Length: 159
Image (cartoon, rainbow, N blue to C red; front, side, top):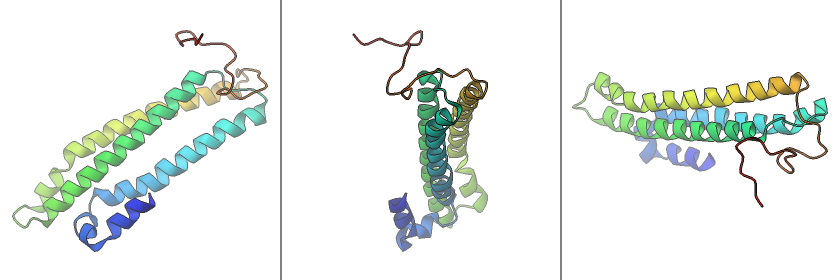
């Protein structure tokens, strides 16, 4: 995150990306990606200690984590690449502003796909959190990832 901030603040890069989707990617990476992953991690740690039960399904934690990671990664990639293309096109005097803006549309569609991934991830978390609030979590003496008590259907069992 800091390295990206340094790179996009360099005059040679800022010339192209200053008013493009790159600044949106940088903001999302810092505010959304970093902050939300920290908050979800904290909730996965704190909530079981508050309610006295463990998360019911380790698989839902994995789905939430990986869908969030892929969603955030795809969003950042689409906005960075799309912003770079947009900046290069805005610097081209033979292209109109409308043409340079329309060149970003495929990348914004990719960003929409990342939004769907993150929405699915957050609904998985909300469902799992609701199970905890209803007292349907597992009773366990150790956290879910350290010792899953019962293997879930479809999970591979190591022998």
